Image (cartoon, rainbow, N blue to C red; front, side, top):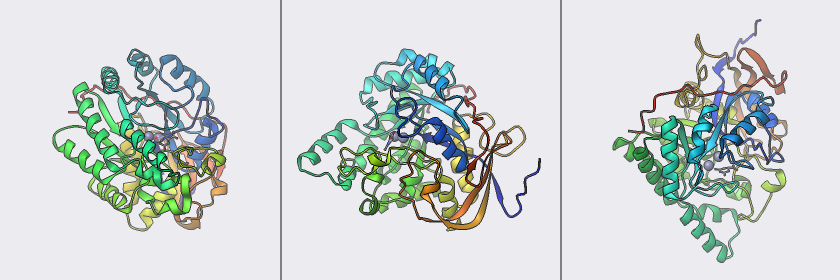
Length: 411
Ligand code: DOR
Ligand code: ZN
Ligand code: ZN
């Protein structure tokens, strides 16, 4: 079959290693069908789904149930994370055997109560991950201190969106980054820091790498494109853990991208219902918002503005994540790789139309943003799964399992 790509760019499909598609148990927010349709329409051909569902994916049996539940609904290929909690080290081998892409560790509070703030429990989980050679992806925030700060702010009567930022000053992140890198090295676990968000956290990461610690880190599209001035416009819609921060932190993240200190970019696609997103009391509001469908258009727009190159976008959003998680056949256009391709029109200019998004709920801070660069066609393993905003064909996504790698630890 032929496909006319005159005047277009053909890129490897994006690999978004940080999405929350909410199955099982939170399907009023999103499900595997809607979330992977959004991915396909955004040129994302592989996603890694997070385990903070209801119930959370903490056991081998729950991993099996989740796989069964989602496997026939996916319009793109998917990896699944298991999770480290305070008492599940015995389950990790069974989770790994089913092809888990990695294990999520929530050091701090997030959607669902999956926190594992206790250092001994964290260490046991890291040891179990190391035995199985699984990447541990960490949400690095100090839970004890952020909860103390939330209590203080509440007691003072604050309920506005900026209070959330004030409850999570940068040392909340820096301290957790320091601790988890220290513990992961001792345990011999492979470590990835999800959504690194602060200038100070990034400086600490760079310093610890200079001491010989091996760790990868991701920035979110939202942390790169929004700063705290957006609280005035968007209120709790942009409540995010870790928070959208002042412009100085955003500049530091871009500098980290330029220097190669931040290895990759992901979305933290974290859907909630429109009613939940409209909550005005910051302590009742959920963190997170959608993003998987808008990642590539937004990043192409940054490329068109000269912030980075299209090759940088491919490296950050496809090649590096696929390599980091040892995804066979992903992240590159070459013989031996899957024909996961996205055809983009790099020159098309248009405003982002939130009503055309494929998620169950379309609240996004990027509505109406002027874009340059449009996703036209998405191929999954050689077959068109999306064209011009329409999903094509039944779900054909498959589970991606990491190629087993010898665990060389973090140092
Ligand atoms: O704001 C967030 N929302 N941060 C997370 O880490 C999780 C996510 C969610 O699941 O809603
Ligand atoms: Zn997180
Ligand atoms: Zn997340």
